[in-house]
Image (cartoon, helix red, strand yellow):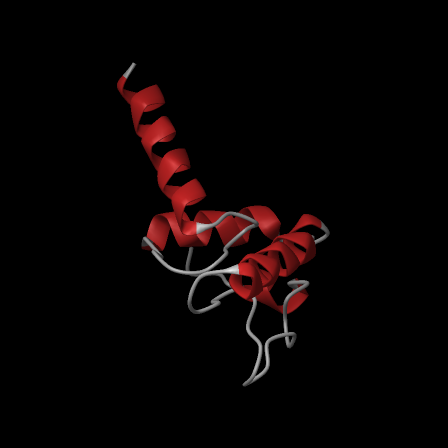
Length: 87
């Protein structure tokens, strides 16, 4: 995954600000839930969603929304992939 030129085409590029980063929200509650929903909505229309998700999986990113998936969703996907490979 050394070629990260795809990141230039990411829908999220430049959307985070010092006050609002929906891909890495802090805390819990309605504001965090809304931020995650905003991030996932951007990911839905992103042309590089798949390589973004793969990067997070390969590099083991534990925080944030990557490729449209939350940390828990990525962990579940990893478990499913391992189970599939073992079968």
